[in-house]
Structures are given as C-alpha cells and as structure tokens.
Image (cartoon, one colour):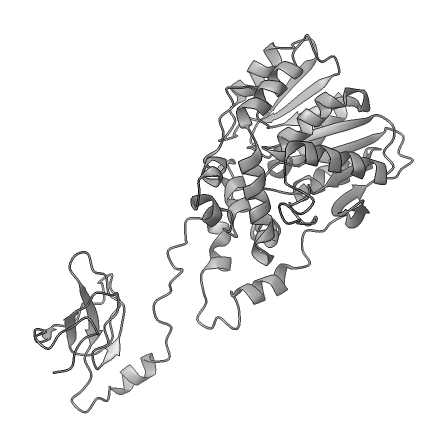
Length: 406
C-alpha cells in the first residue's frame, strides 16, 4: 500500500473511499468519482493521485482525489491540472483597497507579484514634488505656488505612518489662493531618504528637529511662516518643534493630532514597541493604507492606496524607520509637553483646530479639551464627514477653514 506521507508508518490504515464531496461544499475537490482521506501531519498528502486542499476542522487528514488504477486521470482531470490551486494569500481580504495587490492571480507572472506592482505604481504619488539635498540627507519635498506669493508661506507636516501625499489637493488649492506651499516627507517616511539607524540618524525627536531646521534653511524659508501639522509621532514632533521655535511661526493649524495626555495611542504604535511583533508589523506593505482607512469613514481608492503602499512595498527601510521612531518616542512625555506648551500661560499665537469628527483614533473631545486650555487663542472648526486625515477625506473643507483662518 502506498504511504500518504513521510509521517505515515507501515501500519498506516487503509485509505477510506468516500462519495464525491457535493459541489456546494466549502472544500475544494476534483471531479474524480472517489475521494480518499489519508492520515497526515501536514496540510497536504502525497498519496498517489492528484493533491487538492481540504478543510480539516479536527484530526490530521488531508483530502486527496484518487486516480484510476493505472495512475491516469480522466480528460476532465487532466484539464483541471492547469487550473490554479490553493491561494496561500487568499485570506487577506479584510481590506478592500488591498485585494488586488495581495491576492495572487491565476498567472502571477502577468500581474499581482511585487515586481509587477512596483512597475505599475512606481511613478505614482509624486505630484508637485522633487528631491532636495539638505546637508547629509535627501528630502522629498512638494511645492506649490510662487516664492513671491502675496499671502505668505505655508509648511505642511504629515504624521506617521503616512507621507506628504495627503496634502496634494490642499496644497494646490492654497497655491491658487495666493500662498507658497511646502510639504516635505519626513526623513524615513514617504519618498525621502531612509537612513539606517545608528549611522548618522537614530530617529529621535531632537534629530528630526535638527533635520527640519536644516531643511528650512535649504528651502530659503527665513521669514516667519504658517505651519500646518497633522498626525501621530512625527506629526507630534512638528508641534514640539513649534513650541521650541515660536518666533518662526505666524499661525498654527492643527489637523487631527494627539494634543492632550488623554489622547489614545493607536494599537499600531503599541505593537511596534513589542519585541518581534514590531519587526513583523513594520514590514506589512499595506500598513499605511490600513492605518488611514481604520481612522476614517472611507475606503481609499486603489490609486491612492498604491501611493501610501509604495514606500513599504519597495523596501524594508521605511518599515524599520517607523519601528525605530516608534520605539524611541515617549508618547506620554510628548503629550504632556504639547498640552502644557500650548496652554494659555505659554502660547499666544493663533491656533486653528480643523478636526475631522469621524476620526476613529482621536474623538472630537480631544480637540475640545485642548481648546479649553487656551480658549482665547484656539479656534475649533469641526469638519463633518472627515476622519483622521481630513486633508485626504475632505480637502475642500480643510482649504475653506485654512483660508478663513489665515
């Protein structure tokens, strides 16, 4: 008798022949008139005959389709040999915008593999952007408007784990309104340089501040400017930079960001701090788009999801940069400094809170609590229909609030 697999012994029981599984069954079977169950430690069996995948709710059995006595199959079976079998990535279906990127097609070489995805999306997402060398780092910076813009300069800073791509529509419309706009990708994020931790950049708060100061000099932003900030981690570093450089900021616009010690920290950043779990989490190519969608009422369109996915798909470096930054930050310390630094006793410059009220991470109560600490300075503009990234969800409303405020 043939053995089902290396785990079988000479005393293995005979194969039991069962009726063909009905077409309505959830298990995948062949058109053979007989189906055999064979003991097996693995998910597959190597009994003579054609191997197919089967659901094993309990016990160690694999479903196999038995061949004819001469080892040959029917014409229909021969035809099915060329059909795609079990898809090992088929379980990744919880994120609609990622399905076409993760699930493998019938012929992977034609579409869906990493090489093909990169070829399809490698030129996306660079609207208004160019590379700028600032000291030892190469930044990707988006720019709209003219240096001679009559209404001044706005610098937009994104949060983790996203990139400046989220500001593209807001920047274009603010340039039309007469502003000169910049939106860099932080070092280690988006399309900017990804330095290896320990070699000139350790992804600490003070290093991000210094790199940003250097970039402002390179961009020739020497006069006080309008600052707009959104998001977690590096977004918070944009706020702590403002606290340390209040003389350089004319007005401050804050889109959904953690502002008080009661601000919850999303599970992503907690997972990144865990040994081993963080290493696996940071290499998830759809990490950024899932984070955005989880904080919003909307699902990203595929062409947008492609851009947020691209840095994490093309290299492991952005994931490890995020990992390092998340492990170096002390969220509670940063939030205490932000909360106290922008209170009525410490900050006098005008602040706009343009807040997406459908944010799943940071409820409107966070903005309201922040406003109470400095009611004469802080103006709260609730943006209906927008989530954690209002500049992505509803840029037109963000532009309207910014123009009115600035």
